[in-house]
Length: 459
Image (cartoon, rainbow, N blue to C red):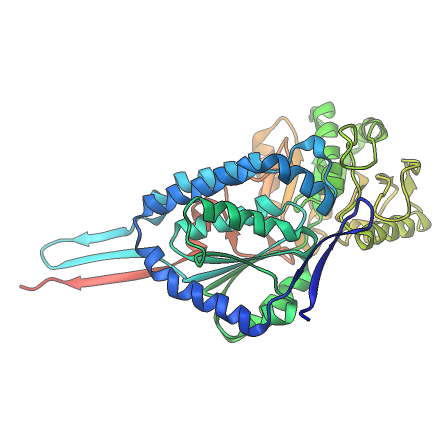
């Protein structure tokens, strides 16, 4: 009997879904079918590919009522937030809108002697390894532009969100995208690495842990396979003396706690100028005290369980270590905190960068808040991290924000907002957060390769 991948629901610890993994032979057959189908897919007119992808997106939207409840069971997000279709559609629609301009050949010359141009051509087969925290939105970041650009796509989802890839494949196939062009697979790590090592893919996009990204690089070593890696994060916020304090507290704390803190670009550490520190902490505590932890199927729940007990255990460990080292915990344990996946949110002060909670990725409903004297100290602390995905700056001075942003080692600089992905901009990171970039015109550049044409005309 084939090994099974199981989704353990954070709601009650039950097995919500399970699927058999493909054997290496069956997985290789998936890739072979994709390779054989890709050439004819790439030969279709660009607008036809765009229309089919957008029809697939609409078909996912038609399933949204079912999807919302499935997501609550699979990874714990409260149903009151309505799923991910808004962002899912926004990203796909934007990538469709810019496809023509992004993929149009660069014309160098077409004169009496030569036609010279640079075309963007698809890699062939793209492997998308998607995470569980925003399983639809993170997947569509690559799936939509990869298909539009003429690639075939093989989608492998996290075990925690087993049903997402099936939903997407069903929707896209119903819209007319050939079954061999978009395939959902269930693979173990060994088979995945084996496929990459065998040069099965022209490009691999992985969103997940630093350790997972390292495994991808090791599997691809020597193959020259293109990699896009979005890995860990420890995103900072900095509140300056001219900030709108209410907006800063509301937005940064929501950025730290939404989805039980399980956001790729969630806020995990906050630095506040001394003059606003006490008032900011007071507002932050009041916001978190109003949260309702509970079953995500209850419309009144604002904070659901973490996706897995082991994720909650890591956050508990970071918090307890910090408190033992002198940090102050401001939120009392909630009665719904069961010591398992249901975890009380926490705000910590008197924290330092010697504590894991300010250095390691928490990926849970906890945030440390530190007092800073000036911009120089804030920049030093924001850069004192192995990660670099986003940073959120709070000020009324846009020039100051851009100047500070130039000094921060990060992929995206926000001013007066956070925890958002703008599909017009490149989604990228630095340091241990990874490499490459998705969405925007840069996303198309990464999902295609340049091909030069130097054509000498007969005289």
